[in-house]
Structures are given as C-alpha cells and as structure tokens.
Length: 152
Length: 145
Image (cartoon, rainbow over all chains, first blue to last red; front, side):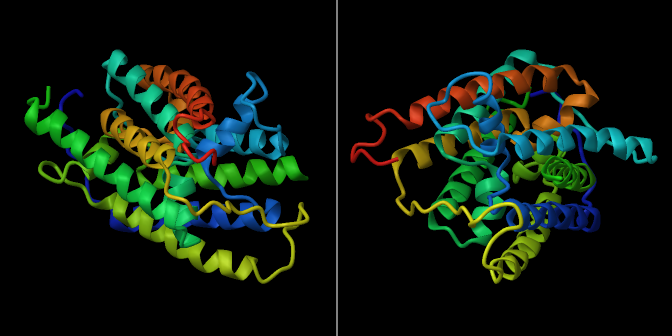
C-alpha cells in the first residue's frame, strides 16, 4: 500500500503514550465502570443514527469521549507538538480497510483497545484469542502485501 | 460533569495515541512488517498501556462502585465462538491494509489525510454491519451471543 516508509524506533515516547492510553482506560473504568474499547464506544454512537438492535446506553459520555479523541491532535499541535503521519493514498484500499476494520471489530466485539488493552488487563480468555488472531492476521497481511505481492 | 470527564478521558486517550505513534499508519504497518522495515515501537505502546491498565483496574475494583454508575459492567462471556475469531481475523486484515484501528481512525480525522477521511465512514458502515452479523444465528449455532 504505497512505498514503505522507514519509521524511527521510539521506545520511550511510545511507552509514555501507551501509559496515557492505559490511564484513560483506568479512568473510564473508575468513572463509568466500562471497558474503554473504541470500537464499542463508536458502535454506541452509531446506534444514535442507525438501529443496531441494542439498547442505547450511556451515549452521552461516549460521544464526549470521541470528541476528545478528535480534539487530541488539534490540541497537541496547538501546544507545539509535531505529528508525523503517512496515510496510504490508495483510496480504494483504504475504503476496503475501513470496512474490514469496522466489520471485524463489530463482529468480534472489540479492537486493539477493547481486547488488546482492557481485555488482556482483565485476563480475559476471549480477548487473548482475539488479540492473537488479529495480530497474526495483521502480520500475515503486511507480509503478503509487501513481500509476496511485491509491496507496490 | 459526565460529559466533561468523558471528553477529558477521550482527550487523554487520543494524546496517548498521537504521542505513541499509533496515529501514524506507517508506524503501525512497520510494526506489522517483521520481514521488512520492522519498527518494534508499538510493542512498547501495548506494554505501557497494559501495565497501567492491569494495575489501575485492580486499584479501581477495590471500590464497590464506579463514580457515575452503580456497578462495574464487565463482559461476562467466556466462550470462544466463531464471530469472535472470524471478526478478529477480518479486523487484522483490514489493520494490515490500512494501518488504522478504530482509535487512531478517529484521531486521524482532523489531520485530513484523504485516506483517513475515506477510512472512517467505511469503518462506521462496517461496524454497523458487523453488529448485525454478530446477531445472526448462523454465526452463533448455539444461540448464544
């Protein structure tokens, strides 16, 4: 999906960023008693626009949470932070990717945050299986796209 | 107050994603590229997040209830079923193509990369369909969810 861009190994800022993510997950549990899974939070917001068959629950703080996510890069830049970002310009591939990520996390009841952070922290067996599965699928997909199909 | 604290939690989560590099698909794809330009940074994101969440959850659960609710609402299902595994596999494939998972997809939105602007609405449609799929009896032969 586009040329491979070499990125720097950033262990300390990545560790620090990860700890902020963890802190947020702990705060959500302490305040609302819920898992901070972004796919689940997003799903409850979609429920406001299209019926999902599930009872609408606590949509208020979840909508505010997503607004906080969107505000994050804006505020980060306002205080002088630089954000490196390279997104594939293959829009068809990005559309397919978005559909798969949405469908997969909807069907599998969670994503990197819900299963990967919150679920593993709870020592959930389902989350462990989900994480191993999506990591393996991610590794395999990148291997095929970059090294079998020639990496475009 | 709930709204304000919900917003602050999301902001903290988003800043973590930005700072850690998770909001950059190139970094995510390099993490997934073991055979090529491997960047192990994301392992540190997961490690830091897991450490804090593992310890923090246990401190929080010592309280009898959350601040704004009367109980901790934790997933109770322990069954490894088809929707879980199939869903995780499809998610992993999409993650490997685009380099975005749901959190970074939101965070990337105001940065206005065309790929990110296409990704998010497709993800919302996918989530809606996935939720429908989860409720189909063909995927849950024992009638469980």
